[in-house]
Amino acid sequence: MRGINQIKTAALLGLLSGLLVLAGYYLIGNEQGLYLGLAFAAFTSFSSWYYSDRAALMAYQAQPLAREQAPELYDLVASLSAKAEIPMPKLFFVPTKSPNAFATGRDPEHATIAVTQGIVDLLSQEELAGVIAHELTHVRNRDTLTQAVAGTIAGAITFLGRILTFGALYYPATRDDRRGGNPLAVLFLIILAPLAAAIIQMAISRTREYAADLGAAQITGNPQALAHALEKLEEIGKQIPMNGNPAMSPLLIINPLSGEGLQSLFRTHPPTAERIRRLLEIAKQQQEAATPVPA
Image (cartoon, rainbow, N blue to C red):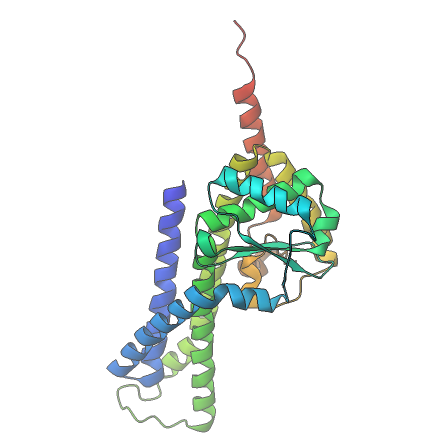
């Protein structure tokens, strides 16, 4: 299952990069646009690889957390990091009552986990351990880098669409006869490409969340605790939303979006009820495996 998810993620990232190259072509109208798209894709990938952690921490106004401020939390993260077999990440604190958490960083050696005041106050120690283990799984699987690259490329596609919107409004005449102001090309870059990029970005996030929930269950051995945590976060998170850059929302452990049908396409996370169902199924399997077979 893990290998399948990685293949899906790589394919979705490839689609995003392809959209960016195609957007560059439609923007310029010739082969130079392809080179622009390739250069833009390379630049955005590198910048997100190197600066993603700073951007995420700034977006939520996260502050460094010293061990003296939260020794129990430090000990918990250190213990879970050892079980996950990765270096202990840096810890940051987000001064908001909204209960949430996220991980960021380009690799396990440069990782950061941020927790809000709300989540520390809301959850029990076992539930908080499940959340931390979920974020550590993201770090171990390098999901933090994948999500950062996806978000940056999606943002670049939207940016190119805005450039073309401006050009269509003020400079409707094109310099390249081959493009010729093709209305389908304009429609693609202004509306369809950013929309497709957003949906692909959400699909990447959803794929990685299920894997991180499974990893948390394996690290803690207590999937029920994470299920209970998600239930609380879903309820309180709707009442106290997490403010910040929407492009960073896939990093959060939970980001509920009300609505069904078409609106569900833009959820950055899988339905919480489905995540809870899967975790409880894992707990049931663990219990059955631990039950002695009668002679």
